[in-house]
Amino acid sequence: MPLTNDVIIKLNEITTMVDDKSKLSESEIEEIKSIFETIVESGERYNIDEIEFWFENEGSWKTKEPRIRITNLSNYIQDKYQQTAHLRIISDDDCNCDT
Image (cartoon, rainbow, N blue to C red; front, top):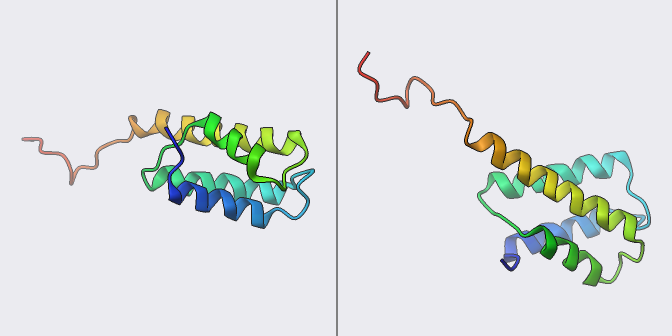
């Protein structure tokens, strides 16, 4: 599945946000998590291999470790969202129960 324009825009935000492309700070990691959470909560899905490929070919990410870390974060956030999405509890207002 190719990356959508919305996902590519968010990946560009990550690239712009990170000052030192050879290492990620803890605050940058938290912001990257937040960006991926925003993506999946909006209903977008992405292929992890495509994320990795995009960062490899973007040009400013010369060091492999931060690219792998971002790819792993994207995978973690998407998996976490998918696992919890089907476990969401229906509120009483949404229930059509005859009780």
